[in-house]
Image 1 (tube, rainbow, N blue to C red):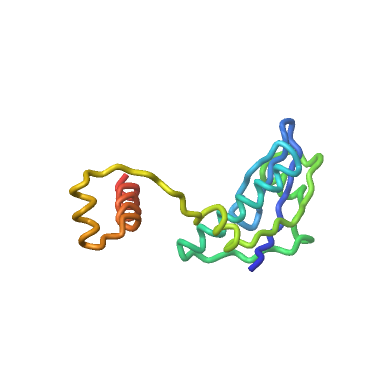
Image 2: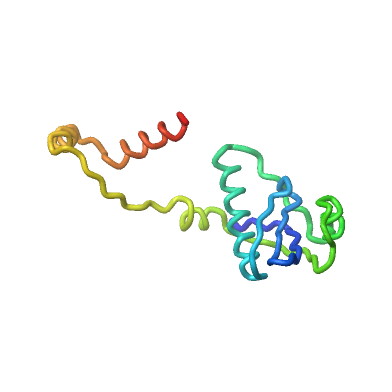
Length: 140
């Protein structure tokens, strides 16, 4: 399903800043308009994906006409020159499949006896490694 949110784009000396007022002032940047839009899509997808994974409510997007770049600039204490509002759209589920949930192959080495014992018990090596890595990450 397509998610579409208004974002304020601000021309800076070294590129563009992008702010999503509806999403707790979520922000990103890019060195060109195209790069800023790509970064905005990635930022939006990541934020909405995380909300969904955590079971948090997803805020409704405001209509584009209700967002004022100058009001956002004042709130951020920023210059209003060269600012504009644009809609940023992403299919979060499809984006996640390509960028967040893509499996990667890892090669590892274990003792032969451990390999044999695990195979005899039909242990799923990938599952065990993922569970161990998640436990280690959460412990830190």
